[in-house]
Image (cartoon, rainbow, N blue to C red; front, side, top):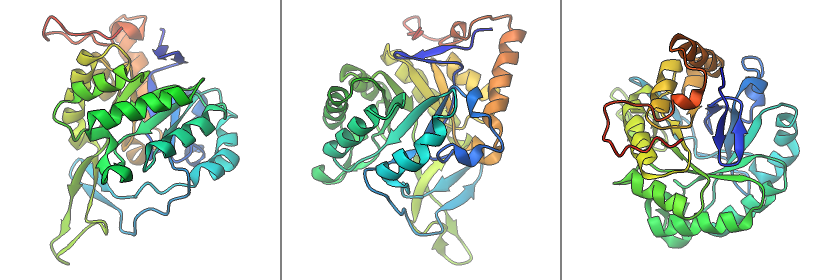
Amino acid sequence: MDLNVDIGKLRLKNPVMTASGTFGYGEEYKEFVDLNNLGAVVVKGISLNPMEGNPSPRICETPCGMLNAIGLQNVGLERFLKEKLPYLRGFRTRIIVNILGASIDEYIRLSEALDDSGIDAIELNVSCPNVKKGGISFGTDRRILSKLVSKVKQAVRSVVVIVKLSPNVSDIGEFAKTAEDAGSDAVSLINTIPGMAIDIETLRPKLANITGGLSGPAIKPIALRMVWEAARAVSIPVIGIGGIINAGDAVEFLLAGATAVQVGTGNFLNPGATMEIIEGIQMYLKRKKIRDIKKVIGGLHGTAPDHNLNN
């Protein structure tokens, strides 16, 4: 069975990746996952300078999911290149680096440095606030998003550019199309959804930051709908994220039009989830007598006749 999928010019051995922020820098899961078997490793978001993140508590469990307010804690670009990337280079898997910045200039500087580092792709976290535009998120203003993506594409030569879309918009298809028109090679979605939880005994928020990002199975129906809408709107590959815990979840996203998927909160529930999902997809194809995973992508029945299969 052929599990190969293409994200722009990047060929993956299978459609299963890790989601940024849930898999560290790869080495943290070495006892549970053979990185060689993954389609790609997406590492924790990287900023130009190290970030300490938010104060604790910054994670709490919710029904069918979790809230996190880590605050984008990371080692920064220089330490990532010197201390983290060499380990990842020892594997035969694709390396995707999620990047974040407070200005377009910061994204460009990160992109240029990573373009020469030997990684395969960058994933733009556009849910960050643009400090030069009054704190508005890059991912919620189509003009700002378009400018960011086009500037990054102009700055790089070798890496594939993926835009990780924010779910906090009225029409995800329009934002996916904006990213495509600006030159993005693919889009990934969705990022976490803002939420909060309260401790009724202490009368205080469960997170020190008060609010955090909701992830896990609770957001899967929303993510699935948005992936389906984005896949209908663009011709570039769509990468599905949100509540993928098992192979059945992954197949749903593929049928909705995703070319690949990322596993996030599932890694916390089961450190070996990605390996089980890859095996489960193979079993699904075998059971359905399908030899090529591409026959599944966009294969949802009972939708409008103009559905874009994105193949």
